[in-house]
Image (cartoon, rainbow, N blue to C red; front, side):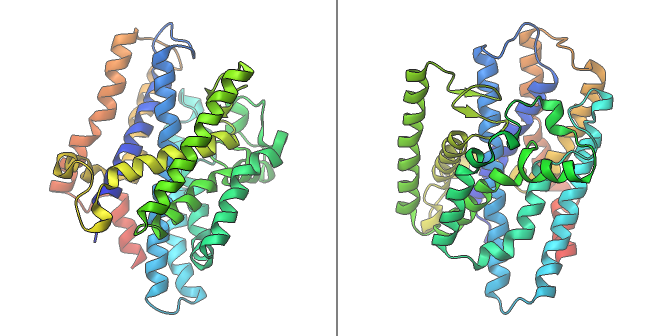
Length: 357
């Protein structure tokens, strides 16, 4: 049975990612990082990727667990399950990089590891995570949370964006994939493991609510710490308590907490056989939630054309830039509804399902 709140969570996550990517390509004139609108855009982006990855981890763990529970899964069966996912996710990452390539005003080299290569690695580790107990995965979650401290300068603390998305040779590419790229395996596997734990506690709302309460307490502590030390609470990069590039331990905990909170709100009573939050009133999001990978790739095709036209220059005033950003974000909702109504089998997700059978 398809869980409606998961589709809604996927939809909201991909919409937030579309919004922040669009805002990065068409920034309005005169806006600085301290502007409230810039802070809000960054906040959506900071929330989107963790939730997107957490829900993806939930989905992979659900699929792997279902396969494992159906009988003995030998090495060849696991390989047949993993290879299509790894191949498609890696291909889509390269496609995204080409669509928004730096040579045409974009943000990526063609070979830049990113969120989809992170999910490809997650697919490779899914059989291992299925075999781990709750305590082992909780320990792994903690290890991922503290890993930025252990990595230190190796994570590229003072790097620019262009250093983080470029690599000279295979060794540097592997380091970008594993610990100092945009979405490196260490520590971003934190959200994959968190997704597996959300899946396994689907019938234990009290446990997840305790996680959320603990996370909110830790979030409050990070805010107090920022005030006492007179440093910014959150920045995309730089000197702050929460940083996205590279992901700081505080960012992992705070964003993971809000991803859990958003999931719990959207879930409503569905885990107990009832309705998700707001019942049918948010059902318009569900078609989008079924094709998030397709939309993720497709929106970069649109942004690639825009990036080529603007070449990184802020050409619009605030209001037109705002309207363009929100318009490009929301248009994917009716497009997804039309897609699911008229051609639901024409998408990356359906192709993956077919070659996985």
